[in-house]
Image (cartoon, rainbow, N blue to C red; front, side, top):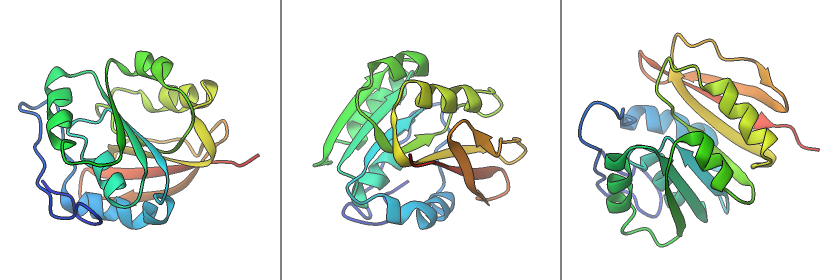
Length: 181
């Protein structure tokens, strides 16, 4: 696993041990970042269910100025700390379950990366919570990495499904955009 583009291109990254984390494959990561690359410059990023932190690190490598990494796993948090040791941008690492994490956050985010456990049924609740807690900037992008069989809604309040892309045989990216006021 490595950073595929930008300032930190080529940097090797570790993955947490065990089967609880699904690291995003390089091919799937390329698919995603081809779609959202123009939204990263000077952005503030939330990597929720961060695992190794690789997606948030990729955002920083491509021009994001700040990233918050959150995960409930001790192994993931240790891995994120190791993987972000070379990062120069502002970062924050939070160890808690997602409802608690959302209460700890301040300000708004331009890009949110969601990769919860597949088939846990968390997407709609998280998308609603991000809006209710006013954590999304106008025009924010929310990326949901989900099982290809998952039925994702066309709209969740002010979040509108902008694109869906397959990334391999089992993963799909659903990119939502918050309507601007």
